[in-house]
Image: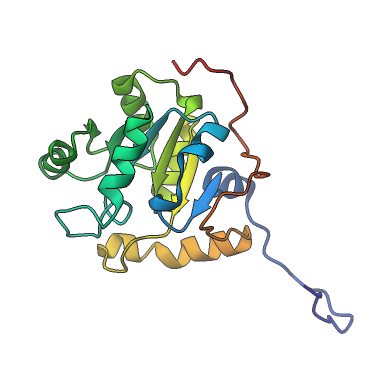
Length: 205
């Protein structure tokens, strides 16, 4: 992109604070969880997924998973990928869904704090450096994952119907992602190099 003409006047540009680029940049940004394939997880040495629920696996307010998500979960589970629901939602609601799809869960995770991520890792018995968090919010899922030392996978929200406290954050998220030149993908390029997940061998515990 060509730089705009300044007419010899000083141009003041906003510089993104380092802490934002460190904590808010996802390692991977996809259109949907359905675009996350087994070969990509193997490529990044991921053996476990901590899955956000609302606007990631299902629409907000829905009691069932979106089309194709159950098959996606089953296919990865059959290949040995461990999974745990990780939500800020209340226990009763998240537990009901977890029982329906036969997955362990952590509710009231208090993302963007990392405590829920660490609890999910202990529940599955996995190492955080071989685990990934998957969610639709930069200032909840991605930041929690970064603080916990996880590989972070951001997906586009499945619906625009969201709680007000999520909607007010979306313009800020879009601004930050645009400044970091982050765009969602429908596929994972083989040459993609994650920032914080280096090959660590076959030991996933």
